[in-house]
Length: 115
Image 1 (spheres, one colour):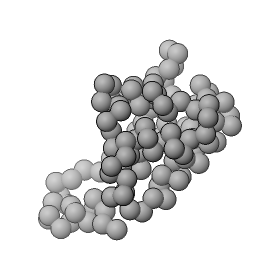
Image 2 (cartoon, rainbow, N blue to C red):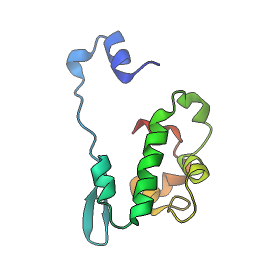
Image 3 (cartoon, helix red, strand yellow):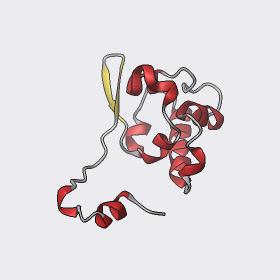
Image 4 (cartoon, rainbow, N blue to C red):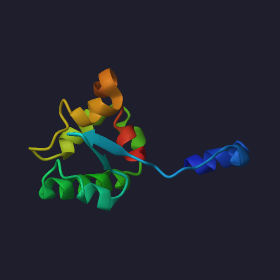
């Protein structure tokens, strides 16, 4: 599988690309929660402990997908709802809407595994 690094190298642009660590978070109930690492997910108290574990497992499952081309026709919401067990907030999700606003229902499933 080709990576972004492979493409940058192929284009001869290694000296013009800056890689930074991903920083993801959520503002909820007057608190900011980091969501960039497994430990951050475990500290995300708006979800029950069991749901934090399930969120972590879902993230691992997303990283295990090798061919994202087959997911290009699905939205992130469709992919997440199909894999998420009841009680977790993806359908009509404030999590997706908080990140993408009015475009949340149009975001490709490819986003979840590549972010």
